[in-house]
Image (tube, one colour):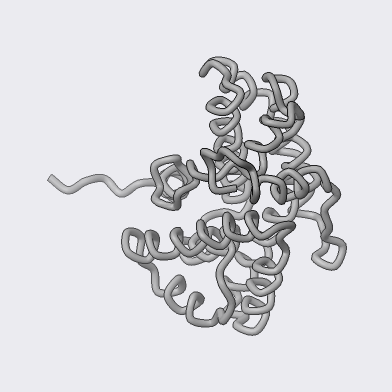
Length: 233
């Protein structure tokens, strides 16, 4: 008996849930985005400070920038704009506040491309990867897959930001430590923050993109020489 064909929205949701789940082989569990040093320095010490820290990163730092890069990647890849796509990929690769944050984004981006080309092949994905000369940052990699599989942009961006926030919550739960329920409360409290970050990224012109979180970058730099470390960033 033939299987019923899924609705387009179901297909998009299913793929986003797979690509941005903790089980997708990009090594997200090994990165804390500087939170490990923030915990050691007592800047992050409980559920409230963890929530505030991640909210700031989503709103004013990596979340904001990654959302814009994902948007521009989807638009340029879908339009077949080879030069524009290569340009945004190079900018995203360079737009990192520290060596560890660069390793985090570029490492996950490379792993995402490898896994997705193997498990979820699409002609545009293969073509677009060949248009890019620079290392591929994580939001660009996800944007390429979303464009290749025609996933709606708003859903793609919110799923990406949710996955990013959830990974940082998981890192905080392990480092502080917190109970699993506290982690879920933290994630619930970040829901409107992620939605607002998505909306801001959808409307922010590329030439107005910037970040304003020197403490997040500082903790990442301090993590490079932290004596005892569980995470790679």
